[in-house]
Length: 146
Image (tube, rainbow, N blue to C red):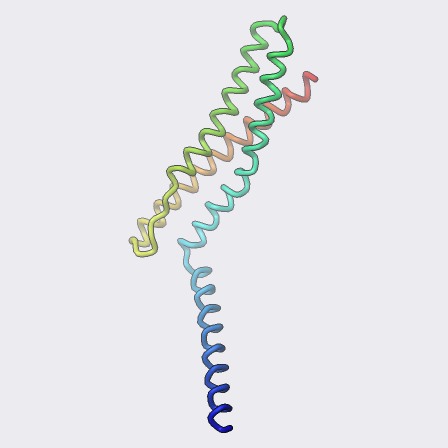
């Protein structure tokens, strides 16, 4: 019986130790400035990535507006086509950013990793701006001419 109690105590102590080590690992990632920066970059991405559906929806609306208005004034058609092109560019910018985003491994020089993540933060913020501006202009157009 003593051996059984001893075994149970050993198992419980080892389980507690494993739980504490996983908590400290989580705390370590929160204290890592590069991990924080990576998370911020991904937050910007996660904010605007769902807007890709909205870009496609607005693009279809503008295309339908052109297709359903055969007597449209040339200048108006060109304006709508520019908006479609801007939506395409915004979507392509996001896809391009995602394709090229390749953070350095943990074993890389922390300074180089930080520089890379800072440059990626600038890039994804530019993508966000392009997407939001294109969406806003297309929304205004879609709602004002219906």
